[in-house]
Structures are given as structure tokens and as C-alpha cells.
Length: 466
Image 1 (tube, helix red, strand yellow):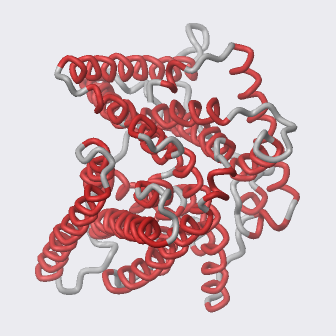
Image 2 (cartoon, helix red, strand yellow):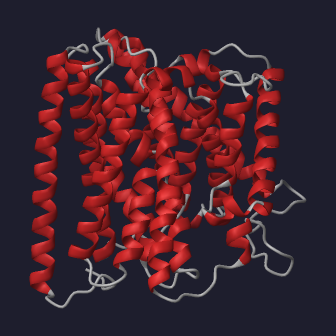
């Protein structure tokens, strides 16, 4: 992924690109504000902007000067910036019954998606499309469950191993996942709502615009404007951490090269977002020690996280190669349909089996997150729980941190067909077996936790702390 750092563009190109994405975000916001179709399915403005850019860009009408390689580079860097913000955000870690179970559930779904995607891809290669790269199937959990940034970063790193279009395939899966999360997800929500009376959604949730008098405080000023703008300090901190991320990754790449492992360097650069998150966590711990980091305002960090994510989602849709998507439309559609169906079936079974209350909220939140992003899950939960009175929204956020830890071995496995087996067909079969083995281990650990806690508290409900 060094090409994302070495891509030669002018300052003018950079400014024009982000200005055009900004214009499309404004258009998307206006469409959400005035068009009932987008309000009905709660389609985010960034998703509307992304598809507008895809259609108006070089892939279809060629009216806007968007280049796929530049959009991909923006996705790569915005991913790391988002993970830095996540690392800087101060949270109270609560390992509740709901958090732990949802954490296990997320990683199990990722493994199911990976196993299904790779299995179908291998069958497709053997039977109907010999030039279909089996690695495309492994990108399903990255695009669906982990988001467009990770799907592009890891998929694009495989170009060094001969899979030239991995990044675009990952973004295509992510785009389909967003459509599944919002359109199919909202169909499920509306079906559930028809059974149970509920309060009407607040107008701003539908339209995306808050009226005057209904505008909560988004951040606090922790510095005096007479000295420096507080927003600038937070932005500077994020920039400094990203610089440290670059130094660390460059240093590790140098060591790999010296050790004769130069082939691993592209994958190393694809994991830069992990390094960024770890460094941010370390910086936060150092700054918070002794109260020195009280100037880090959660509200400001949250606003920056959301801003980076909006541009990331829009750029990720614009970076899709429609020619690649159409060329392998049948196998990719098969992977998406089967993957989404099994995700739905497993989560529906698991949420009603594990939890005693708020089953639907947990199910729809998990389903939207495992096909879209955590923002998708929170948006759909809000339809049935407008004020977030249940603990589900907080559980969904906290469980993502646990899922990141449990899911890291999956990221290692996903890269093994190239890093260990040089892209050989047999290597994909071995990785498929390893994913099955890890799924068995994870299910065993989850079952052990479930039995232990329910034995200690037979009447345990989802809202009780462990």
C-alpha cells in the first residue's frame, strides 16, 4: 500500500477532489432532507453522495474528474485517521453480559462470512469462472462486517501478489453491504414496527436536519481561543499520531526488508490502521495519566471521527470499478446473497437464543453493523428505540472493541493465502480449514462463557452486569 503514500497528485487535485466530495455531501444532505424515499430507509447522506459521485464520475457519465486511484488513496488514509480518533475517544469499559455476547457474535459472523465467501469462490473457480480469484471471497467479511476502509486497504495490498483488483472488489462488497443494511434492514424494522405500536421518529432522524431550538452541544472548548483554537489542537494531535504511525510502519518495513521478508511489506502497510489505533491508545494513556489529558474533548473527537467517516464512505463508493464488478457480477452476487442470508439466519437464531430482552433491537443492530457499519446499526436501532432507552446502543459500541481483539487472528488468516502460500489454490483450502478451526474454537469459548455465567446467575438478563 505504499502507492497510497507515493501517489503523485498536485495540491490542486487534492483540493478539487475534496471540494467536489464536499459538494456531493451537501447534495446528499439536501436529498435526505427533501426526498421521502431516502427518509424512509434512513439512507445516510454520505452514501447518497458516494453513489452520485460514482454515476457522475469516470465510471459512467464522466462529468466529474474523479480518479479511482485517488479515491482509493483517500479511503486508505481516512481509515487510519478514523481509527486514531477511535483510539483517542475515552470510554468506560463495561464488560456486561450483552457486550461480551455481542462481541463473540460479531467475530462468529465474520468467520461465517469468510468461510462462505471463500467456499463459494473456490467452487466458482473450479466450475464456471477459472480466472476468478478465490481471494475475492475472503473479502466478504472485510466489506460487509469491517467496512470499506479495511476492505480496500487489505484488498489493494494483494495487488503485489497478483490480485490487481482486490481493493475494488472489497469496496464493491462494502457497497452491496450498505444496501443490504439499509434497504433490507429497514424492511425488517418496518415489519417489526407494524406488530408493536411505537413513538413516531423525531423529524430530524428522518430528514437529517435539526430545527432551531433542538440543537444539542456537540463539543466543549478545552483551550482559550485567545491562545489557540481547540479544534486545531485536536486536529494537530491526530496529525502527530499519524506521523508516528508512518514512522513506525516505515521502520517495520525496513526491518522486514533487512530480514529478507520484502514480500510481506505490502501487507504490513495495509495494517497501518491497527498501528494508528494502538499508538492513539498509548498516547491517550500517557496524556490522561495524572490528568494531563483532560483537554482531549470527547465531543470534538466524536465530531472528527464522524467527519472522517463521512468522507471515507463517499470516497469508497466513488473508488469502485464498475467494469470489474460487472465482469464478475454472477460469482460476486452469489457470495453476497448467500453471505447476507446466513448472516441474517445466524443472528436471528443467536439473539433470541442468548438474550431474554431486547432481542429485536440487538438483532437489527447487529445485522446492520455486520453488513454495513456501526453507524448503520445505531441508525436502525433508533427506529424502535428512539431515545436509546435500552442498553443495546451502548453494547453495540463497546462490543466492537472486543470484536477487534478477537477478530485480529482472522485478519492474519485472510492474508495467509498470499503471505504464506504464494496464492496457490491449495493455500486457500488450508486457510478455509483454519477458519473453520478458529470458528470451532471461538464457539467453544463462547459456549463456555455462556454456561459459566448462566450457571452463576440462572435468572440473568441481558441488562445485568457480569
